[in-house]
Image (cartoon, rainbow, N blue to C red):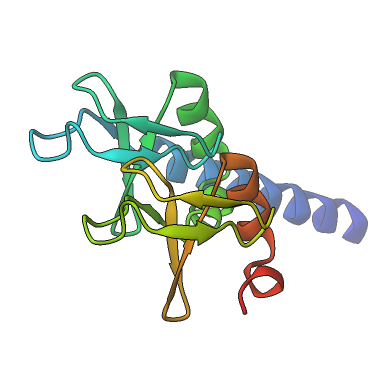
Length: 150
C-alpha cells in the first residue's frame, strides 16, 4: 500500500512539472515587430543567423528582452527551451559605428585580416570590440569567448 502511494505521489509531481512547463511555453506570446524594430539587423537565437527585421518577423518578449526569429520553426524550438537560446544570446551582435567602418581589423577566431564594412558583425566583450569575418567565427567565439579575447 505504501509503494502505491509513493508511486502516485511521484506521478503527480511529474505531471505538475510537465504541465508547468507547458504553461510557460504557452505564455510566451508571439508578436509582430513595432515600427521602430523594422529594419534592425538582428540575430535569430536558434539558428544564430543575421537578418533584417521585416513587418512579418516573429518576435517573443522573454525575461525583459525581445527575441527575433528567422522562421516559424525557430519560434517552436525557442518555446521548447527558451533559457537555452536566451543564454546563447548573451553576447549580442551589433553593427559597426561610422567611425569603425573602413578600419583594418583581425578576426579573433580565424585571424583573418579584413576591412570593417557596414555589415561586419561586432561583439563587445569585457570592454573591447571584436570584429568577425563570418558567422561561423561568431559561433565559435560565443562558445568560448575567453579563449579568443586577449
